[in-house]
Image (cartoon, rainbow, N blue to C red; front, side, top):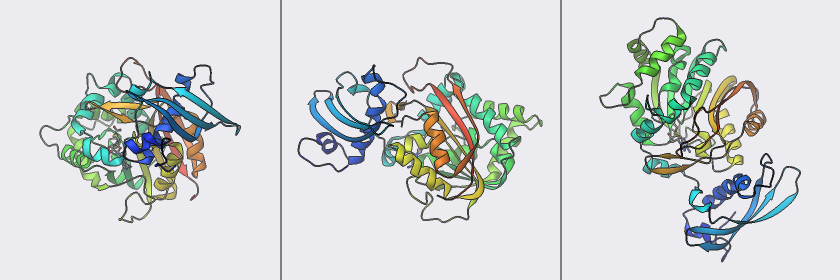
Length: 350
Ligand code: SAH
């Protein structure tokens, strides 16, 4: 979709990039179920064209979206979005992450041991349990694991560090990589993961102490690298030998503006993996945005059905996939109904 045509692309012209409009249209069609209550919510709509017909005071007031539904029928929707416009979120690109994503505020909102959203609603316990299972009974192990979109969090590496000789962390933003490294060094003032570390030690049942686990993690995470999942080699300009495992928890759904990009990103990550290597992905489902540090960030609306088909199409065989429904659903910070953890094995290059 190219911007610039008089009238039709006003929205694109008034924002930074055309991809913003594309992202917005995808987002918009995902919201058709809210906008057009009589439409069938389970249908997967694929926007192919969109144009802004009128602009209201609070942004767009009327938009025309052509969408392709599964059976290849073309439908055209004229939608009034006056009431929705304030809750629509345009795609948050990587440079916005680089400029405004605040690790401390993110950690406080989502991982605070008492009030963190992912603590209260059960995501964190679910993820720790599944990761423990994958890295023990499911036998995921090897020499090198790359953690893509690590953010400032380390819960995702606590079981992994027992099963791999080295972990390479990777994220787009400098601040997140720096924060992760400072936490690894246990610098004063960084987020305290002790109670979660204790939980993982309990799951493992080997009597490992929190201090021992911290040391193990520090010895195993050898480096953190800049990465961009949107690039065909996400670690460009580095070219690493293919690894045994790639994990990406809570990143891809935020880094991709639409479902085709998501599929492509799976292919990009697959290029880092050996045939027979494992990929572990976590996503929140049916989520269109999340709040962090007073800013709203875009989230691509993902479903279990899409995840299953995209992962399979991109040359993986699903070994395990589990969806956990959230226990608490009242906050406005991150509206999602469930989270998904999947373990898949690379069976071919795509
Ligand atoms: N894994 C963490 C962090 C999630 S926040 C957790 O489970 O909580 C989402 C992360 O995606 C941020 O750290 C952000 O910097 C990263 N990200 C966004 N776009 C990216 C891109 N194009 N390439 C790599 N990382 C990206």
